[in-house]
Length: 106
Image (cartoon, rainbow, N blue to C red; front, side, top):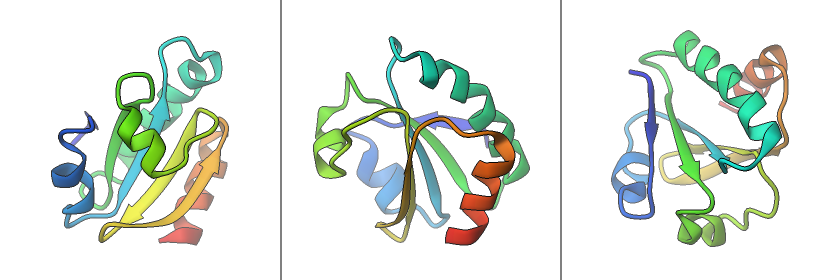
């Protein structure tokens, strides 16, 4: 399935109405930790292919999403299921920590 780019315009369809749980990576191009975290998100997405939808949201370009979820720092990772935020995490973490966080919150 890969990672999809979500915008303010596509958020409802791709995330809130998703049949699968959604992991969202909120990032920005100028953010060093975000660039380090991106490959970890990509690797983790492969491990959950078909079970969880993974999405990226550029915080600079999609401020409505930032405001809706009160994003104060990036990278922020959100787990949304059936339109509800089940968990959020701030900062880049290693793959094993991310996978543990996912499993604990699904």
